[in-house]
Amino acid sequence: MNTLFPIFVKAENLHVLIVGGGYVGLEKLTALLANSPEARVTLVATDIRDEIREMALHYPKLQLVQEPYHEIYLSDKDLVIVGTNDKTVNRQVQADCKRQRILVNVADTPDLCDFYLSSVVKKGDLKIAISTNGKSPTFAKRFREVLEDILPDSLQETLDNLTAIRNQLKGDFVQKMEKLNEITKVLR
Image (tube, rainbow, N blue to C red):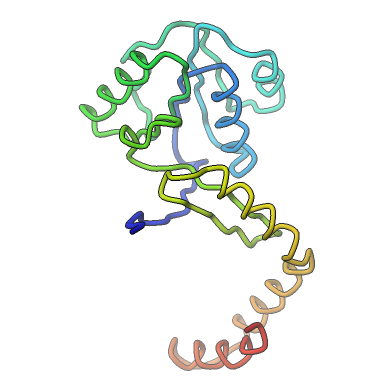
């Protein structure tokens, strides 16, 4: 049973640390910035891929630190994502985060994670997060591709229209919800 609590975080209000500058670090950084381009991110790694360095040119809030991980890098961080190929470092970061009560995700190690990164479908303002409870990121990715194909690009227009209708409705919350439910019945 999946007991995870899904939330959408305003990453631009957080300071995120990514530990790892290889392929996994690049993957996590790309996902974060694709969804939250204004996120403040510090990436720490002994080796940093050229693609990450290129990203830093386009994202002024991305700071690269080419040094080994040290607990000092957790200072003032709100969220940590770990993606190194060194299991000892991964476990050390997780233990340091736990001690400091900072939520951490250790790539491909569900037992060390406080949260999982979801596969995300975006159509304008609509964002759907998909989780397999850490069981199969590949399935989540494939399901995302299916949803991207079947959801029309015109969804943003529908959302804009519903927002305009909602803003014009009179009455209390219950009355507004009843009217919106009536209007959106056709979406079933």
